[in-house]
Image (cartoon, rainbow, N blue to C red; front, side, top):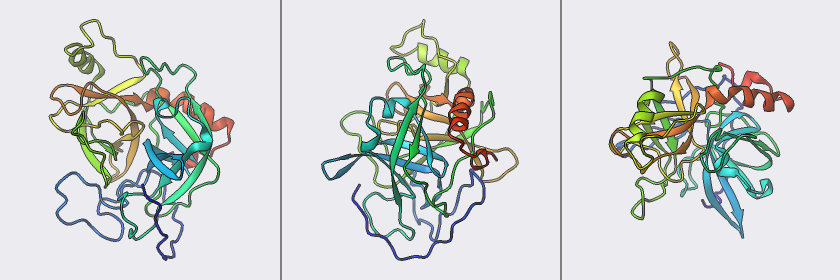
Length: 289
């Protein structure tokens, strides 16, 4: 992630409500996207969480904007990290160019909160909120995602995961330069548990209620480095509008047939999220469809 120069564009702030995808991108459309590249600004809630280390910004994981100064991510990404060392980048797309039509924005993290029952061994309750030093300016390529209702179920929906993570497991895998999108089916917890029992987890594995699953199709999966990134599902009867259903948590390998990826389940964790946001007086209008 190089520091990029600011393009000289006047950008009107836009507050059009949460969860609106820009399916044709913002300003231009990619021609010949063959490798699951997202359009510029297609998923305007997607952020990169970076760690500052001796003049470099190192990619830590993904996250999603839920209010101008609040990021939803996975606890395992930011557990035991120093808030002062983290930077959140919104509006990013191609991590190696300076010519995007609307520049990305960076903000320092003021506070990290993760779930009190987060278990770093099993990754139960794998959710965290980052509160920023100052809010992002909402514009076409920087917008919040909607949150699901408590207990809302997305079973059998086809949803999108996005990230800059690796395209393969192991040494051959490479981090992505341009933001990738993968459409995945949500898999019921019963089917997911049955599938995962066929792996090295063994036949007594129990899938915790704080998880949901998606994927299980060959070569279509989130992978290393996608941790904390959002899995977003369509809002019924509202084209191109999405809610955050899951947060990339863990998986067995990447993109293997009949082995779904496992995500923190946002609708299960919503009471905790609401409680923390209410304590800090974050307006629910930002993430309520």
